[in-house]
Length: 446
Picture (cartoon, rainbow, N blue to C red):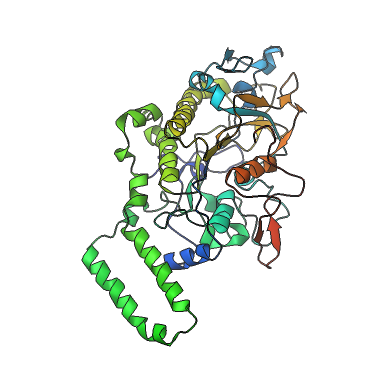
């Protein structure tokens, strides 16, 4: 079973951290696999090879200790870390991110993300919108929108895979992360409940399964003969697709990182085996698993990494977390470039908000929704640059504020989706644009 080991410690607002680390599920809203595939197929499909990986940093990472250090600020603002130069002249980042510094030409840093809420919730990072005043059913996540608009790239692989927070226990609308698009576009979540073992047909040989498929088809023969609309032929196609997923090794192979080149696997690392609280060795494997799933045919993969709610002992925690993040993200950058995926696979790394400029009495930083940061790479984007700037204390965006929806517009653009034209239907059938009017792809990246 693919399970991210973790304890039940909680964020400052009572949200269980395990909700962010124990992930996924085979549950699909009570729908059978053919029903899900039928709904996905009815929404249209695309044959493009584009994909997106979203790495969510739950708890709110400290932007001014990672990518926006303020060395001219007073001691209680600037903290304990020093900046180091990167491969791009003029761009400096934290001393505990040396591997990323060496690949800064392949990364774009946004230092001026605005519009967040003071709320421990992945909702805004996964949908681009705030979770207030939602339409009936709720806003759908990016992966669900992509599933609806583009369908599966490969019939043996779901378009949206969630190696991300346990979405069912987050502050979603009642319908879940697919929002008003419905359970057909929920993420396939291999780590919830059973995991990989649940995708194995135990006690049923391929011959017996084929016999059962033939029996099912024989039951439908009479209806099919009487049907002149072609509907039964369509149902046969979706049953064949479901059968294909169950019998194909493609999904299981993508999830099985034991099949990866040992050199590449070693580059991603296995984490610190002593660090059971934040997932231990398996936490690092998700970076590699995300690339394998995208390469195998998934369109969108989400994952969560570690815990960043550091109200106390901020710098001690970052000394442990930052090297792991550095290794995982830098390995993913190198991997997608070496495999020729850098034009087609977009990656975003961010959290729900930033942290306060002033260090508190416990040596930590508190919530700061006014500004935060993000990393983007791949997707054919223009990298090796910093977008936006904050003031001397790192508390306000003073140059080029960037809204969450602009990042989403950019990701959709990279997937070949025009946010000025594409819509998805809500529960009343009303077409809804993917981002609000006025939000466009980030021109500096396109």
